[in-house]
Image 1 (cartoon, rainbow, N blue to C red):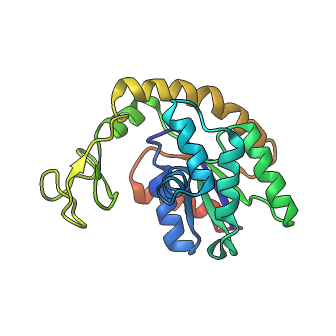
Image 2: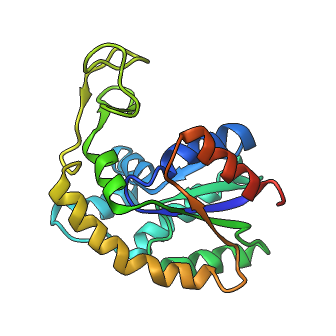
Length: 215
C-alpha cells in the first residue's frame, strides 16, 4: 500500500501517519526526518541540501526527490509506505510518478486532511516537542503529565522557533498557493480522498481507515 498524505502544517497528517504505520505495518516517510537524517549522516545529498538551507534558499527538487527515492528503495518499503510532506508541488509529483512507473507501481491513495485555518493556528501555536526524543505534545489538546517534561523520556519540552502565529500564517499562504494544483493532479477520478481533519484523533483515524481498507 503506497499512500500520500497532504495537508497544511498542523493539519494532523503526521499524527495520522504514525497510526497508519502502526496498524498497516508500513513505514512513515517524513520529508523532515529524511532531511535531518541525511544532514546528520553527512551523506552527499545531505551536504548539498545543508548548503542551500544555510544560505536560506529552497532545496532544489532534484535533491529532495533523490533523497525520497533512496528511502523508498530500502527493504522496509517493499510492501508500501506513507509519504508525509512529499510531494509539495507538481514537479515532485511527476518525478514520484516516474520513479514508481519504472517499477510498475503506482500510488494507491492520496489523503487530503482538510482543516480550517484557525484550527491549524491553534494547533501549531500550542505545540511542544521533546528536545530528546521528538515526542509531540500540546498545551491544550495533549498536555504532558509533568509541566514541560516529556511523558516518554523525561526530556524538556520546547516550542519550535517557527511554531508561532506570524510564521504559520506565512506558511499557510505558501501552502494554499501550492496545494490546489496537487489536488487537481491527484483528483478527477484519481486516488485523492478528502478527510475531515478536525475533531478527535481517534475519530479522524476511523475515517482514514475506512478510506484505506478497500485497497
